[in-house]
Image (tube, rainbow, N blue to C red; front, side):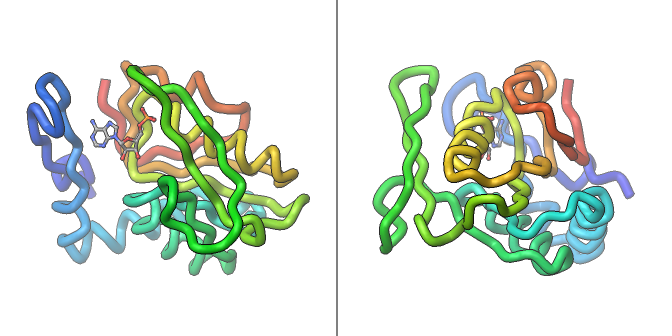
Length: 171
Ligand code: AMP
């Protein structure tokens, strides 16, 4: 199946010069959605993950079915102030300024094997910060799972040396 054909391009969103890769057109295609989840599951199946970490917000969409099919749990990583219980947090640099991600303190146990899931990797900053967060907690990162990879931005090179699945790449 041609997954690329199901992902819509929106030029100049959310700001001029950015080509937004919109996965909602993939999500509303029943065959495309099933194929995508099946492919992710196949590619991550042997990693032995016990938890899937989904990055807000589109990482939740793919992270939960991935966790379900891997017989793993799911733990959300969220923007500041969204999680109700005690959190671990990490600050990371953006092009201008910094951002912060949070995870519940009781969401992960040291030593557990985790996959980090998001819809897309661009510069890799978000996924790298999430990796640092889970490694600080003492988890074993076993891999990353993305639908889309924007290769020209070199995000993959920013990540720790573990397997990285991406289903659709743009140069
Ligand atoms: P980065 O930290 O640069 O790898 O950015 C990854 C995050 O930003 C992901 O959560 C994506 O959903 C979002 N993102 C970045 N660039 C795009 C893009 N061109 N189209 C859609 N989402 C994007």
